[in-house]
Picture: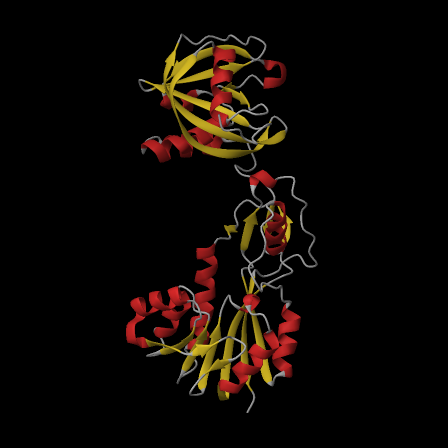
Length: 381
């Protein structure tokens, strides 16, 4: 049997048979006299599935014959502490359930899910249960929203977040994810690109996300991409609208000069930033612009991610270095650029992974910090 590190967390049985749900009434002592879904803690060396089968036999005197995993949810408040619970849909059992564990249970009964609306003393698990059932079965969505509005927990997920650059409890922020950040980044890049004309070079296009944005403004773009797989993919995606130049970021071979050079989400992977900036300056026309993005090394999001990497023994990619915005701005100014900086991601939070809920919270200098910087460096005439 596969072992798990879920010790101390829980497993919950959503026992739904013939349209009826099995619920149990907890005793007042330590259990708040709430109607709940059956289940219990996962012990050392147990999988969540094994733990649930054991708990149902110990508490209700039944054996599970058929079950499937629905999902997992962390309880922000659950009898005074935080725990992570695995939910299983149980559709076949052996035996007649009864309150076998009398110290914990007072009563068990079968109810139709709609009857939950009429039960005042519902426990916290029903909100999460109905969420998973609605997603799995395509039913109970309206019931889920009604029960959710009655949920007394302050949050349904781990309540500490890296919000812009600090750690806060927050009810209605926007969750930081790649798509939301990309949309904000692309909107800012689009505003900058539409100010310029002429020839353009993109450094490190990767999968071509920003390349696609550039080609909405320019007829063609030259690309510096050393990965042959990316080159093949980009040709297939954009055809003769892209042209590749040879060389490395520190020393590439361009047969012309450019009005615009773009480098997004690649600067941290360039080994020698000084040579790279000098090379960009050499291929820019006077009055040209160098557009680049840079992660904010001071943000709580970045510090939390770095701590998570260390816990997982995940090494950073080759030549990956942290760059402070002040250092990059000074480098560009020393190379003869006038520099403007725009911060992105003030309105997002990043949740700390639940398995790392004991992660040291990062210390930050300012209450609100951006997730990313967009830098516009104009070459002085």
